[in-house]
Length: 247
Ligand SMILES: NC(=O)c1ccc[n+]([C@@H]2O[C@H](COP(=O)([O-])OP(=O)(O)OC[C@H]3O[C@@H](n4cnc5c(N)ncnc54)[C@H](OP(=O)(O)O)[C@@H]3O)[C@@H](O)[C@H]2O)c1
Image (cartoon, rainbow, N blue to C red):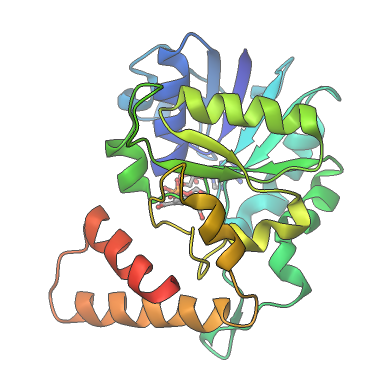
């Protein structure tokens, strides 16, 4: 497929590498210009382009920028062909008084994002750490494949996104509608916990809207305290802490 990616950070770069390797025609952009995109992101054939060109004639546009930068790129997303599937990888961290705030109607921020972009949006690849995404891809059929939840309102969009998640080396799992995508956001049991295809449904169903914010804060406190004490936070540590705090 012809795929554009906005954002060439930890997630966008890995997406570019994996999807190009699978034969997709990938172009990728950041805010600072194509010459600043790291060679590694382009190592399997993706092309670096200006953000103003990234959505030209694409079939899929993946948005992988920090949540608070989405307004800056809305004009480029709106420029994508009407038929393009728009996929967002971002996470929602509402803050109040310097602390993580309780989830409110903004917790279905992807719905808000749909309004900002003026397009239906799919949520995928948000619920895996950059470390697991980089290190844990496997071939299709691997019984130990890590599952990635995909939320979408249109079946055709969901099908495309699940197929692309599979192409990146993970099991794409239908997590329901966009309005329910709070179930795959920080603090929920499937968020960055490397669930398997066989148990992800149980963990999605176990998510409790009232507890998600406090669980999310708890994990952030533990991780922050560990870092303050000089600890090294690697991917497996994050998954372990998240599993303990979010279950
Ligand atoms: N890191 C994780 O573990 C992880 C896991 C799952 C999902 N996510 C989510 O995925 C998204 C990307 O995360 P990340 O860790 O890859 O972020 P990152 O490493 O900070 O990279 C962000 C990228 O977005 C680009 N960007 C920002 N503003 C832009 C703009 N106005 N126009 C074009 N490009 C712009 C940046 O380009 P410049 O540097 O040129 O500004 C950079 O390439 C975030 O929403 C994050 O919450 C992250």
